[in-house]
Length: 626
Image (cartoon, rainbow, N blue to C red; front, side, top):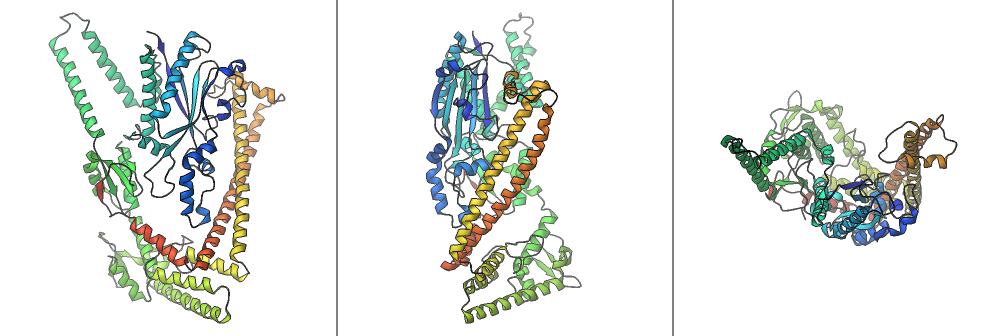
């Protein structure tokens, strides 16, 4: 039976050599391409990636942007947004091949067979993968051997409360297609790649061919997996021997041992099948530290789970294990003390006296003990904590002074409002908004937003009040909504220019790094997975002055360019920061002008609080939370 090896390799858009649309579409001719045969290449799909993004996400992006009150939260270009981020890949590319250049070269009879096999694989790819949108696909017949390039955008269509209703995510796309992760070693990507290789093998068999095993899969096995594979191979070999050995050799105890091993394997398979089909349950925790600890333990045990917006889901067969982990979890003392500091900060700004602060602590479940030292005991904790041990801002004397400073700020703000009314000052509405904000916070309608996290919360260390103070100063200097909008537009252009400069610097750095690898192939004898010696030879055509004596000078270019990238990155970050600040001022001015500043903050906080599920809850779940 004729045999062909199979190769299925996945690359990323962000990897310089992971996806190359210009190469795939022959926008340039590489050294290893036989240009006279390029007209034989088969193009299945060719669509500009930006057009593909508009087709896939245009409606979802418009809906998302329409909901964003702050201009800074709107996404102007979704493709650029994904490409410039580091959470998702803009697109992926797979290179598919049957055989190789030695046994199935282009132009040979076996090469023609491979072409037909690849064509059949391509015809079924999109149907098998409805969440992987193919925007570019080419079968190359002008290189050493036939191979297929498939470029696709992975997308999800449901399961997101925040963000776009449909967006880019390889993980979510594959889970929607039914690839349920079974742990870090068998995640959705591994399962999907294995499905595609199985499909390649099925195509071979349907045409009467067999797969040539080059042991390539061993390179990705753990030690345990390799041992298991060898044990199974040994068992199969013994079974094959049973068909050929003489009767005396086939002793009863030997046959019995084989049967026992087979039965044990069948039981393991049955147990795994039950687990695989076990329904999912959803888990929720009020403590993010607790959830993170449990998920870390599940990963250590190779227990599969999938994260949701408010928690995570695991199969029903793991419920008892998760309940045991919940009991084992002990909140770090530092977390308890951090929570106590935050509660004191919040309740202090809601109190008019020291005694009222203590009463509010009691109402939230703290046990308060007054003596030589003020101490409190958190709920479900056996030990009292002296508040002075929380730091210099939390001694009894400091707490009383902070309450006095709070009252002084409020009285000063009231006087400024009265003066602004008397003089009809343009800052009146901003000052009144600041007063409304302090009242809303005092009624526990708003969350803690410190501007300096090294200091406790106060009216002079609150991010929203800081923004309003900056806005008040600008208005005093003559700023209007129109001038703030113009400033935002200028900052937006400046941020875009800095971003372009950064990308240009990164592209130049990548070019130098590729150049170094090519030179190392030529002059240092390096074996490269990217460049062949023939491909590397092209560098000397472009730069004829490079030779064996001076090629290492490329390291100086790389070092200088790395500094350029670092500088451009810092400038881009600063421009983005200024843009965010300008956007915040515009949004604040718009809301103050419309009289909705504090109401909007309260509404957003209500939405956040109402979205929380019952702490430590569990409910049935069959998929991502809708």
